[in-house]
Image (cartoon, rainbow, N blue to C red; front, side, top):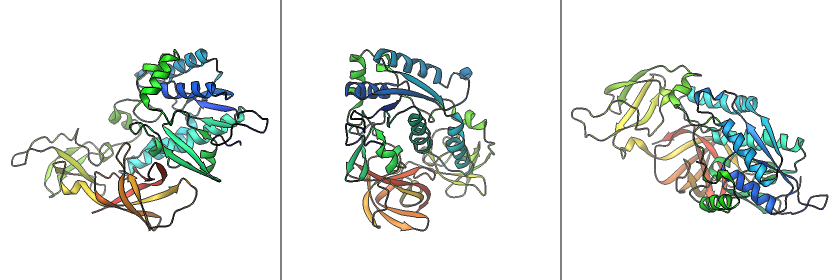
Length: 373
């Protein structure tokens, strides 16, 4: 496959054929616009990854497809469609459910990028004749010799490298991120100037490819929740929960315990989930010591350069999307790594990802297993 990061030509002497992942949103639409303006022979592919009728009004796939069709008609680009619902269910959603059963808080976007957008999509794009693929992610790729490095997007508020840390060298080699050097306001301006109707479309949120919907009711369709006690960190029973899978570390809303006689009056936060006793442990006050920790253990360690750096490693890390990078040290541990932060970190949630950075390069990451206080 030609190297889209460094070469303008393929074996035939022209730019490589590109398949743009077109979601129906403004980011991928402008990515498609830029590729066409830069002279790439480009087509678009719309993925449907959740097999469900829109009767409940939460799945926007039909509207997204209509928007993608309008963008392609405006730009004169061929649009293909494909259904990856099986791949999404088998490789992403079943893992998502397993994590919730285990009392963890998964991040499906990370797995979706690796298994669907940069695996199933790539294979289908190649079958359609594409030599490389492009997406609307706010991230960048740079080549250093034979090595490909994943870089943060220039727009710090939109940078999506956190969700891409599981990509390997082959996936980075065959990918383009056309809007990675742009800010969101510039993307919307370009879409408006090009007459693309998606220029003011709201950014998508919610579960990857499933959309925004009442989360507790959605999970109840797949998992059985068992209620139990809510206890303070001192072991005092102060209420009942609706099932541990519905709560995450640091959660404040939806606890249903409010103010209590003799308490400080500060809000309550989830600090732990005791699966053996089906007990939700809470503490009062955002700055309670039980919410903070300097060290975590993580597994499924992955390095984007394809090889592990020498450990221990001084770098920066994020434990959640859009968090400012935090100084830390990464140490080797059985089955993964141990991460020590210079400063206490708030509400570290098992199941989420810790992602490592050296300035603007995303080095890799791992799945958080536990916290050491």
